[in-house]
Length: 213
Image (cartoon, rainbow, N blue to C red; front, top):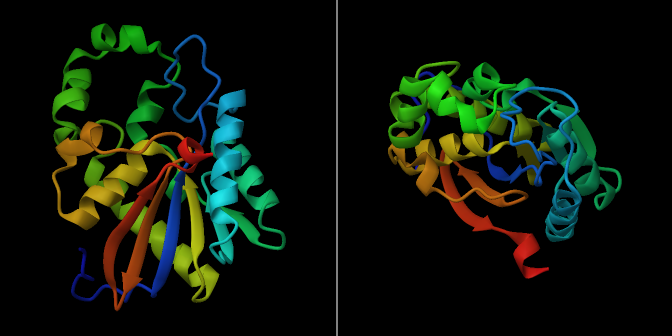
């Protein structure tokens, strides 16, 4: 559980559903980072539709989304199940700075191109500073959480983002090591539920709606 730091504005109360975008069409296994034109695969669209059905009964009042195409497509599918719910883009929810640094490279070639960083990413991501640290990522995701709660005015909100930022926030809230990045579930189109009560944050659920569809 995370409590507000001294002097930090109080986090609004409420619930935020953090959604990872659906599976991406990427047959060449490119590290797509912040690159444009990386769309959802058909399976990813089906995953997003199942997540939309799950969220349709949650009384969400606002959707905040990463501006990247895969997140925007996931958001459109969710929004189609929530008529009248406003949508806004925010760079606070964008993919990690490390992904931006590596974008355009083949995943198969990353260990040779960036051996030291790749080794840290695999085994000690909490120590990796290239592009953006896990701590910095968690901090901006906390700002996204606060923004979503303010925009939803007391009702639940939805944030559509990417694996590493969502997991960074979860690990920070739960007081766990950032080195647990790859041991913490956040599969495509999954939902990580965060609640704020008197400024105290808790992860209250992790759901994969498409597995039950």
